[in-house]
Image (cartoon, rainbow, N blue to C red; front, side, top):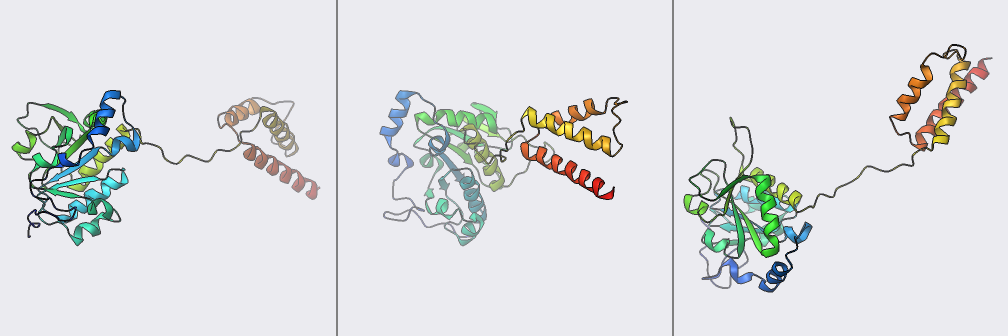
Length: 285
């Protein structure tokens, strides 16, 4: 595979101008304001300050898969450290519509430059290292990243597919995070790992709104009582219920229906069934 073009001045967002670092693009006024308030950011405000860094990615398809994983969870700041091939049509195909994330991705010559504007950096690793910093699972690490967003940008870093982060990369991270997985088979491809962390970051940011079940009008107690009166009359007519020897039939039926929190439309359905039974019996007579 061929490597991406060497950085030069005046190039596209995929490339880096000479001597540029991520720190040059920081809106320090926004960071200072958030830091002074001390208020936690949530939702899209928090997610907009989270950076995903892919270091030395060998296959462009994994860059596309990572972009797709990011966009589904509301992340958009993708940074690449010396990718083997980028830009790439393979990456665009695997992105499945998240091409805007790829178009805005930036390429850096080193991880140090890619995270220069970040106040907290987490490295993703599937194995233990000689690491003197904090080690936590993906959920706890994601929560810590979101909690740090009022101070500025934060980053989650992923190493290359074959060997992960180098020791030099790990040394640049404050936290090393792992995805709790089957210890007998913990191998995740890069896109899947990004998806897990992206999901945890979204949940930590409180962006969990989704669709809800349709709400229907609950039946009133009076409507339910009238249904039971109707039911008793019909079951008596067909010979299923004997009022002179009721046993525990209706207490059990009432307990059954009370557990369901009957809706008005459901009561109407049962009343319609009972009326049909009465009409059928009348027609036969």
